[in-house]
Image 1 (tube, one colour):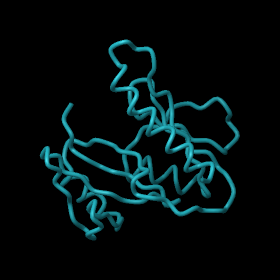
Image 2 (tube, rainbow, N blue to C red):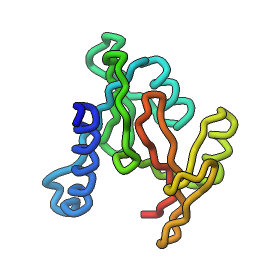
Image 3 (tube, rainbow, N blue to C red):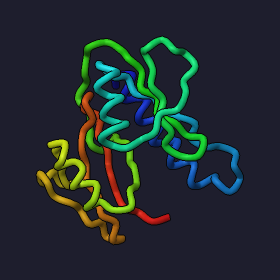
Image 4 (cartoon, rainbow, N blue to C red):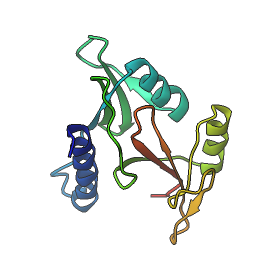
Length: 151
């Protein structure tokens, strides 16, 4: 398994632990790091297309962009080599939005393709619990889920 996929899988595994142990506050998600091939393109995607806010990063080397993704939780984009690796949809980052339909309208404005869980182009999945979700890829091929889950 390549290094970036292992990082994403570890982040997803830790997210599962967070819910189970949140009351004890013994463990919480700090950050997820993704290697990207073009920091400018990926920063624009996550900031202007997805809608995340940047936060200060300590390196100031033009090889890092940090985003806030929750209370004391971050997404770190790190400029790496030019090699991209195939990504599996089961390994994904998930962001919750107030309205999947409004988010879909934003994606359409930017001509960003999305699909349902089953792969139907331009379709929205409705899970058995009523949550609506879509899947899309970032500029490096990492999968993102966008849903309207309520806490």
